[in-house]
Length: 266
Image (cartoon, rainbow, N blue to C red):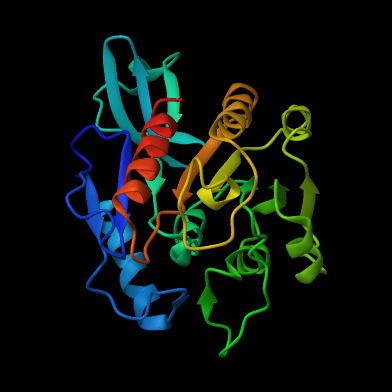
């Protein structure tokens, strides 16, 4: 897979991405729905490390190439890495299935070895305390990231439901919360790389159909803040979840597919 040019990857856990390409299939791994047990975590990490070799797309009008980062240095199959200087750098987009699997973000963030900040665009804070012996979960992965990753300097939550923020307080010490409208100005002051994690449940049902309670935002509002982030910050990673796993209708699938297409073409 690393020898082929890709702009995005699908991580298929529920089967919702069956038939999509390029795809990393994880549907055969038990113990992944909402909670990720230790055996599942070990197998997922192994497959991510084996097949997911790309961090960035380097491109201009006539050249495209996939590269990954070692610290702040490009690693590429190019014979002359200097040829990449000055070209546009776009982070690989990772689609990670339903919000039930939002903890997948941990397995990409664990590879980051430079100081960075997490931008969470989500209707939920995902900071519930660990249960069942500290098992990784979709509802607590942000708290786990805060406690596990030394290079994670700050968590910026934008657009999260205020009632849910209150329910899960106190939030991790590294966390700041902002409204979606305040986010672009805040991003101008961020001087370290940014990892973006988007759960489509931040949007209303007109723009996304998910398995969880949803926010009020439109796709245009989300795209506006994503463009602001891309224009003002160095983006070190970008993942998207929020597919509908439970009994999706044809309309559900069409709406999500349309939204995914627009997100792929920012």
